[in-house]
Image (cartoon, one colour):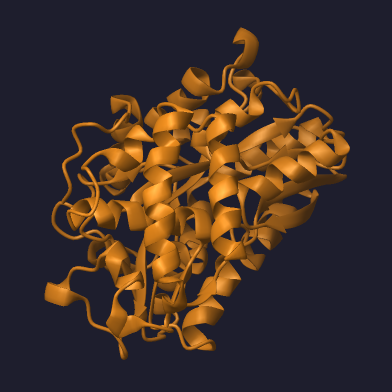
Length: 383
């Protein structure tokens, strides 16, 4: 594991990710009580959310219990969320699902409105360390939290168990770039380049702590990413494909000849649960961890229904059942007790030993950082 002493990671962010990993040991919460308006509620709610977060069974359960029609627009990146919201000034969407570290890109857009905690009712079922992030980092203009936690996961290494074996049983971001895997790997461009940087640090090809120091200012970032870009361009032929969402990761393993890739945890673990020869594990350099949340559009037309959606998201049983289908982890306390044994097995195998202690929470990301990263991403893709 690389030296982490220079990482600008806030202790609270690491704490809430550790707390989420321990959610399975939390006491089971009591039954969820439907608000008086829910049974009489009707209408619809329009949700802009990651493509695989609302499985059919979850959607049917929500609609059956509340009488509210759920319109789900699937997305595969934070950039899609921001662009779609900006295009209509939030109109047409009641809820969107930004990742916890993106608050700096939303604060000045005025596309969101704060949540009223009193209208939720069962917020105590959410991981309290994650809930605090909303008030600490999404409390725009001191009007209250504009973000609530929903699902957390990591990005690390997935592979075909019948076609690839990690050295010494522990994968590395470097496996994507290794000569022996040429033409059979995949990554998402911007996070794959960051993973390459972590590998470079671990392999002694770049100063330890450089990747995280790049978040400090633009000059530092450019010096670091110039090195990363050269490394990746020299090995670009290694990539079979670049992915943009959950389905493209699954197709890479099942249909496109990929044997190892830098992926989210959910897609390969969902395939593993289905019996496919695919798995996922935290790499030796540490998985990159994130929490995706729920934010209320400033132009929401269905506010009451949006709150019913949040209340249902914090019900442990449907949240736990969904775990088996999407493969990620829930921010709801006790949700994992409703997941199957395969989920628990997958979790233990994905994060063995000190893997949870070595998580790399994505640092808060300013707009300047996102803009410069896009510049390097475009350079890689155009070459």
